[in-house]
Image (tube, rainbow, N blue to C red; front, side, top):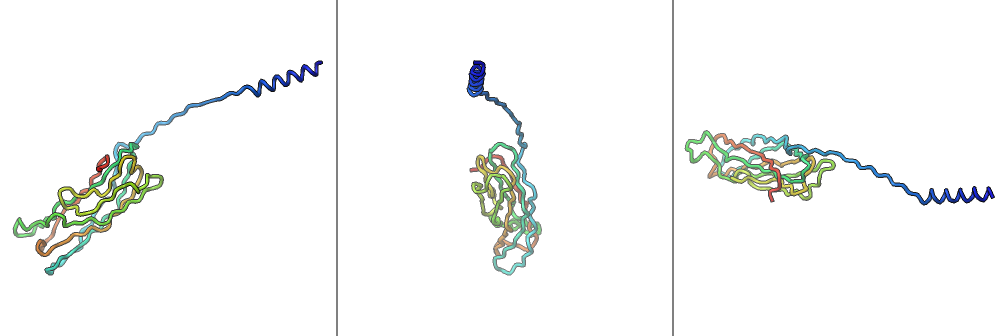
Length: 187
């Protein structure tokens, strides 16, 4: 009888252990802080190659350094990058009306962008082209909402300055090229 009771107690204990389930849960959190602003570094444009006028249209080029663009804001708000150049001015021209080249003389080279490791893909970043020496310049890159997050390398092929015989006067021309980064997409 004692054996039978021990057997019943063991089965009862086994059933009570098998029928009992206990779950444990732990909640964890972490704070994520983004930077205040996205940044662009490394933008420089070289001087153009010298040109000798001969009565025909001439072109000359200027190399642009690789650019690093970093968006670590953590907002997914998008951004755009614009290049704009002032009118080329020749301080040596004799008459003030002859001192500038016409707008749209400076064409942007081909723009390419490469995403760094674990950055959002570049497939949805719009790349622009065109002349930059005009009132609006060119939006060269446009990252929409939830695009452009991470680190990117931007390359611009040499820019081309076109000198038409009717516009180019002997002397040294100067222009200032400005790169602007704006938060939020432009489109």
